[in-house]
Every structure is written in C-alpha cells, then in structure tokens.
Image 1 (tube, rainbow, N blue to C red):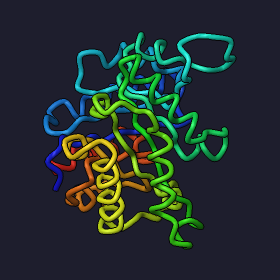
Image 2 (image 1 turned 135 degrees about the vertical axis):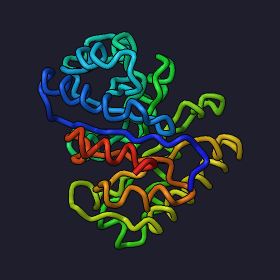
Image 3 (image 1 turned 90 degrees about the vertical axis):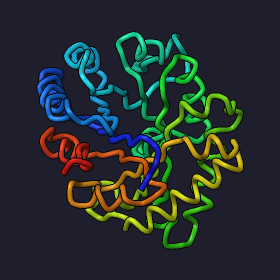
Length: 254
C-alpha cells in the first residue's frame, strides 16, 4: 500500500453542461466532506470550470482542467492558457491524455511544452502515458512509456518535479471494461518509478504520485490501491456519477 497521499481524479471529458456539472460537484463534495486521507479532484469541461470553482470553494474537492495550451496568451483560436485556468481556481491540469494524442495530434513535444507552461503558472500537471493494445502485444509497453516520459519531461527541472503527477493509462483499458490486474499495473508503476529515480533522483521518485487509469470502478479500486506503487486513480466514466465516484474516492472508509 502506498505511503504517499492518494489522489483520486475524475475526468469528465465532454460531458455535463455547466448546471449539471455544478449539481454533480456539490453532491460529490458532500459525499467526501469527511474523507480526510485522500485528495479528490474533478476535471469538468472548460465551459463549467468557473461555475464549479465558485460552487465548491471552501470544500475538500480539488479542481482541474482537461487540457491547456503552452502559451499564456496569443492568437490561438479555441485554446485556453494556463494563466486563465489558474485565475479561476484550477489547481491541476491533465496533459497528454490518450484521447488528445489519438484525436487531436498531441505529441510528446507538445506535452513537454504544456507541462512547463503549467508549472510556470502554478498548476500541477497530471501527465498521462500509456501503451496501445498493439504495443502491449508486441512487447513494447516499457519502451513506449520510456519514450513518452523522457521526451515529455525533457528539460524539466528536478526541483519542480514534486509538482508533477503521472497517470498510467493503458489505452487498451480505457472505456473497454478491461482492466489491468493490480499486479500488472503495479509492475508498470514500479518501472515508471524506477525511470523517475534514474532521471530525477531517489527523493523525487519516492514522493511523486503515479495514478492508474483504465476502467477503474468501486469493485476494483481497493485491490489496485493495495499495490505499493499505485498512488491513486484517474477515473473516466465512473466519475460522472457522483455517488459511484464517491465510492471510489472513499475506498479507505468502505
């Protein structure tokens, strides 16, 4: 079991109007009010961020965004800057999610630029990495992850590494109902922690939180969290229902 403070994060993707997001966030905040051992974070769509930030102010619920641009301002139609996110109360931002890589041209290079910009703005980046089913079958899981980590964190200053969260999301498990076994996930997380140790040193490797993402549910969260290198979860579909997500977030008291 991890000795680091767990983080359970919900990625709401392209779901919920502003009003729906506020209602769900308030219900969730009520459910986790007495949960002192775990950090809980949600990432509503951009259109709901400011309203949710105001609604959950003063609660234990943390707020994040699903993406960010690497410039603070400029002629980038449709983009959102890190300063804009920080100004409305965001603390975290997801960077490099597999859906951004698959559908919207995200690369290791743009991930690297976004992480630097996020940290400069005082945000905590949640860097997503993961292999496809084909890469897994061909034995390329570790080489794929190594490339994503090393390229995405190129030039990253070690004294900033404590702001970083890594989320391992096997692409083959996202939205499929298929989940890596706790032992499979632990093997990958241990590998990632070893890579971080080689890159940033033992102290950073021991403190950085590595989340698991991929069909996380109330039924499997406890077994996943029993693994020594799994420090939380990045939850997709199951985070949309505040009652179900609260079961995941409050796994320690169940």
